[in-house]
Amino acid sequence: MPTITRAVLVVALALMAVRSPAATPIRLMLLDGESGGPWHKWQLTTPVLKKALEETGLFQEDVVTAPAVTGELTSFTPAFGDYRAVVMNYDAPDERWPADLKAAFEKYITAGGGLVVVHAADNAFSGWPAFNEMIGVGAWRGRTEKAGPLWYVKDGKVVPDQTPGPAGSHGARIPFAVTVRDATHPITRGLPSAWMHQGDELYALLRGPGKNMTVLATAYSAADNAGSGHDEPTMMALSHGKGRIFHTTLGHDVNGMSCVGFVTTLQRGAEWAATGKVTQKVPATFPSAQTVSYRADLAAMDPKFVKGLNPLDAAK
Ligand code: ZN
Image (cartoon, rainbow, N blue to C red; front, side):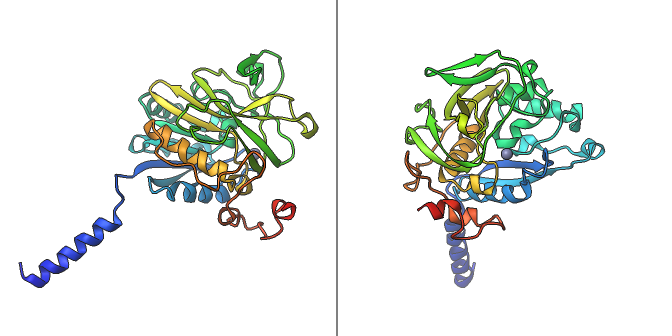
């Protein structure tokens, strides 16, 4: 090989070495599409999730958008097995997925696939038993006591409440405190014991089987903001077969997702669901028990965001 060619090759290899990540990226499928109504704009929130996951340098994500027309779902066969975890920014009714698709997803999770359930994804598929076991608790889409008891934390314990009624409620999107209930889990280890979350929907009255479910964090659903008066589960770690599931009820919209607390727990939850471990440090900008901390760059991904007009800016 001529010296000049060899020199070029050496430089090219050196550049490749610098540019390639330290380890093989963890492949994630970001599943989005259909929603329960105009209020969950996955078209706006998926890019926020993607950016937050990408910046860790750990993941490689592909966005897979499910069709919203039942007939088109018969040819929708996502290659779940190509991914270590599915990040679900998706909500659809029971009848949407054909039996084959549901079976393929169940097989993937049972065999050890990871799942991250973000906010409204726990509204999906109210009558699909395996899905409800994966998420532990869910809301809306006709869920009642038949979906399972209400689950919340009382006197430091996760308890079922057999009171009949519908499932799902939230008040106005104001900041609220998130309290860590299990500081030993890889996702929550090293986080402050309580932190203020950016204005968001605080989901309450969640119902479900609650099997194999560890409540990692709760938020108090205050009666003066249309709440339940209970410490509601906001972050959960679950298992289903060999599969690991991280479920966060936070993240209604871009504003809620811009919270550093949401971003950090999403990043850590995705790594845990995919690998069973968390290698990421808690950022210095993590919110405290007194003050919210949000990412202006992420908040600005909502076209309605106007710098300086965020109510949290005004409060400073
Ligand atoms: Zn919502």
